[in-house]
Every structure is written in structure tokens, then in C-alpha cells.
Length: 116
Image (cartoon, rainbow, N blue to C red; front, side, top):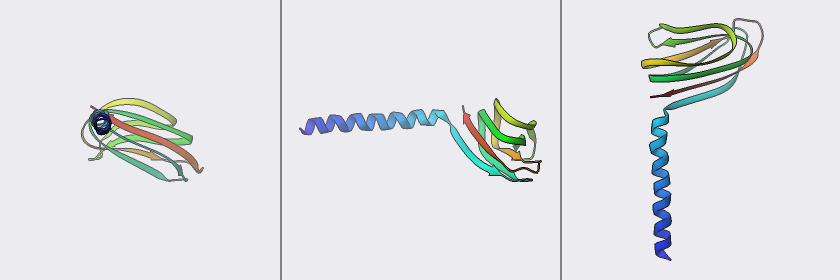
């Protein structure tokens, strides 16, 4: 009976450690769904270097841009309701800035993930 418990323990530990290894390669991911009022702003941050996958979906037009920690605009997507892209980012902190230039209140869903 003890040998079965030992085998089970080895299998469980093996699965847990492989999950940690694979998670290490998957990178950092963050997502949110939030209400944005007139003139409001939502900021998400992530850290490079790597391939940044970015998705923004909004039920109202919003202004979307990706900005470096130093204020350099890597990409300005303009006023839109949908952004889906992959970009290479250098090391440092990067900010996804979503602002509402209109007078309406709406819902924004955003996802950022960086992988090597």
C-alpha cells in the first residue's frame, strides 16, 4: 500500500513541476473587463522584452496606444473599438493606455501577454 502512495506522490510532484516549467516559458499575462466613463482612462502595464500580444474590445470608441516607461509611443492605434496585434517590445515597462474621448460610458475588455 505504501508503494502505491509513493508512486502517486512521484506522479503528482512530476506533474506539478512540469506545470511550473511550462508556466515559466509562457510569460506574463494580464486581462481585465472594466467600465470606462466619459473622459476616463485605463492603464495596464507589462514588462519586456518579448513578443507582446494585445487585444482590446470595446462597445464604444476608445483611443488606444502602447507607451514605454519613458513616454515613447511605440504604437498609436487611434480611436477604435477593436485592436488585436502582436508586437516585439524591448526590455523595460510598457503601458497600454485606453482612454475614452467621448461622452458615453462603455465597457472595455483588454488582454496583454508577453512571451519570449
